[in-house]
Image (cartoon, rainbow, N blue to C red; front, side, top):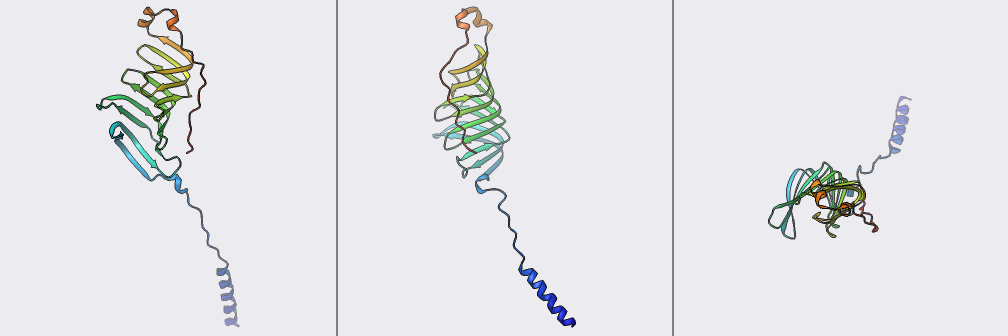
Length: 206
């Protein structure tokens, strides 16, 4: 009788083991969400058409060439110097976060964006797009521009990429330097008005 009980118990255990299922879970992250390269403490020179054009300094630089569109990501801030053909610094750009879409040649700078040019023009905003194909800068966020001649702020900014010709619309203020006020008449001190339609910036999917 004892042996019969052992046989029955063995059959029950075998049946229980046969009913067990393998438990699997999907990958934590999809393949295209992972950077193919992550660099820390970056201080590197970037060339354009064989000419050294930029220096990038960043605490972290992620490169993702799989996700569409392919892009670089600077989650901990970025500082960039731009050089002329003689390797003289033309401008610097910095922001808290930055994306560069490599196939679109489009920079998207986010948070405490600061730009300064060799001509003394200073720009600040919370967001800035730099379209290298169109050679233009633009922002739909509040922007503040200070030049040697004037100080102006508004909710839409567009400019050539050297900030030599720029427009600020929906202005909240336009303050001409004292030296310019003495030489300019009332008409010269008027804020610029631009009524042309504004295009919304391209926002690639991340």
